[in-house]
Amino acid sequence: MSGRVVAYSSSPLLASRTPVWRSKLIVAGIAVGFLGLAGRAAWVQVFGNAFYIKQGETRFARTLELPANRGRILDRNGQLLASSVPVPSIWAMPEAVERDPAKLAQLAKLLGMPLPVLMKRLGEDDKSFVWLKREVDESVAREIAALDIKGIYQRKEYRRQYPEGEAAAHIIGFTNVEDKGQEGVELAFEKQLAGRPGSRRVIKDRLGRIVEDVGRQVPPVDGKDIQLSIDSKIQFFAYQQVRDAVVANKAKAGSVIVLDAQTGEVLALANYPSYDPAKRRNLTGSQLRNRALTDSFEPGSTMKPFVVSLALQKGLITPDSIIQTNGGRLNMGGFTIHDDHASTQLTISQVIQKSSNVGAAKISLQMPPRDVWDMYTEVGFGQRPQVPFPGAVSGRLRPYKSWRPIEQATMAYGYGLSVSLFQLAHAYTVFARDGEIVPVSLLKTDGSVQGLRLLQPKVAQEMRQMLHLVTQNGGTAPRAQTVGYSVGGKTGTAHKQEGRGYAEHKYRGVFVGMAPIDKPRVVVAVMIDEPSAGKYFGGDVAAPVFSATVQQTLRVLGVQPDMSVKPQVVVQSVEESY
Image (cartoon, rainbow, N blue to C red; front, side, top):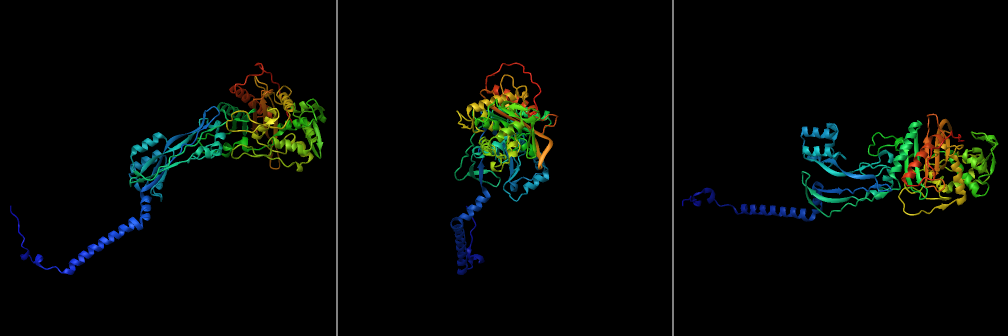
């Protein structure tokens, strides 16, 4: 074994004596360094611990929201009207995005946005999170994932689907991109449908990968399902009928409502124009308006049954009482009330059948204004409908103390007050339920419903027979007749208000009725706004919609026909006074 021997005595460097102060200085420097490190460690771990934890969390900790599945909306038979499906959304961590020009150009193309717009989003002030596009198709999400761009991620969200489309749009409404209700049932029942999102606290590395979970995970609570009273089959058919009537009559709009006369459930509510809740680009206010609830109008002759039934209730008249109509003219304080058909006298039944303004005005003037006002308010006019729908109007009914005689007379045939079609349909349940008015429900109800009695059963039955005459030859709405079922109802045709007066050639045609007439199961109300194809009377434009809707509805409900099924001869209707 060989090795080199170092002779310390012969090396000047090693042999020189090191001063004591130098070694002490070095030891002291090392000690101070250790003390500094110890102090810093104490500051980071003890005194300033909260600050550094917060800074670490800011950079690497994330709270991920666990979205709750929104509740479904079902019809009365369990058919889906709205449901949520999972869809991917694309987001980015700008500070970590791989800046490959070719890949980013392809990404912009898949997202359907210009490359400069994409680059602007990636240059946002928030370097840790930015949405690129919400709710993309699965195929697009797969192609984006295949690009394998660092810093580009996907997140599961939920998109609403509406199987009934535009047919039920005004009932169901829609949600926004955050899955929050904006219209209709989606808005009215937001609290029940939305549920409660959960959360997950995680630590991510600089590439956005989840390293570990921290803290307790809060699971989401899914929203509750809502079962409506709507029957999707009846809803679809009613929508088709009102749509076709609006188109055929070159009208501005139309609405139809179907109520279960026994329970007050809304079986259908449709408006046209409508929209597809899943495709809402370029929507107009005209399409979005739920006219059956949000539009009020002067109801015309559909008000006459309420005045006549009140007079019957008070014993002032009977169905066969004679009333002098003076050739269809009545002068009051400088105003002239007139009928479209001249007659010297009519029975009370004929006042309804032929829609006499003079007859209705004279009957109303036999009673104190307070009594007439009470009747109107008890059936719901002048009050907001008790349904959880946003935007439902109360209409207009002035206090009876301010009524002049001419105003009491004109309100008897539907001028000087305003109602919504929904209010009108609800009010007619008082005749269908033998004098009881039932609360209206948009949700499915089980069992019997307690109503509020306003009329004696005999009075309601007599009124139904008068309404039946309206749909027979000689009445104002023979086109309301339905094969297999007896029907009854009342037409209304009113000039539209324009400024402080009335438009000469703009009308609303209305028909409200029920079937079968002896024991009504449904009440149907139809309104056609501004028909311009030559016909505008309610008996011509609205009654046919009623006829087709009633027939289909009663078949869906399994109601047996109460008349022999045979062709019916319909003659020209008597033009109603409006």
